[in-house]
Image 1 (tube, rainbow, N blue to C red):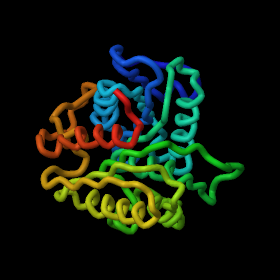
Image 2: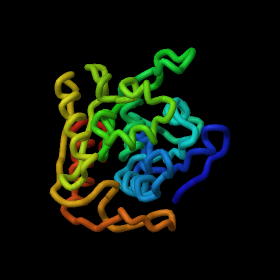
Image 3: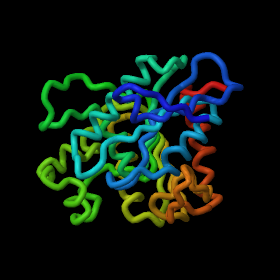
Image 4: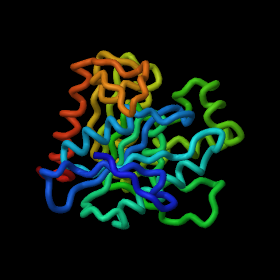
Length: 259
């Protein structure tokens, strides 16, 4: 069951602890929903959190700041949430800490993974980074996104387009990643391929899955709209929905998840 927590960054977080049948230190995941920095889609927030909780991971869903408040605000929120998870103030016994992000949330996850500090930031050194990343049709490079969309997302920060393209900043220090998209997702597929290319080129362990069916924003692909808010992208595509099984196997193989 979800538990609301309450202090500055914590009031932006909804916690879904690992199910009661799991004991001892458990891995944790910062969940960054997509929504084009205009909304936070529940099926990529609560939906992912329920799935992760059932696997035995603690899930922390972050309501990061949205437009018209642009960068670095959402990145500041994500870093603070990562520090909060590791800090232990939530009272849970936490092991490795990863991040999962979809679309715009995946872009934010990528910035966390690369440890990118923007030129518009002051006093930021050695930002917190996750131990593993799960990238669902995540934005890798703004050059792979239609220019009108880029202009809408970045506004006055358009000159920082390259800085804000996380795949351009991948090096060997980036955490292992699980990357997936569908062949029917025009923005998702080329960005997923770029993520895989950049990670592999840097020698970072990466697993890539491309499924034949399903559009952008499909989430778990199980047809369930969480949080009481139906979403037109929440389709039921059984084969694509198997990405969660593949991802769970990847977490176990990497030693991040022990049953």
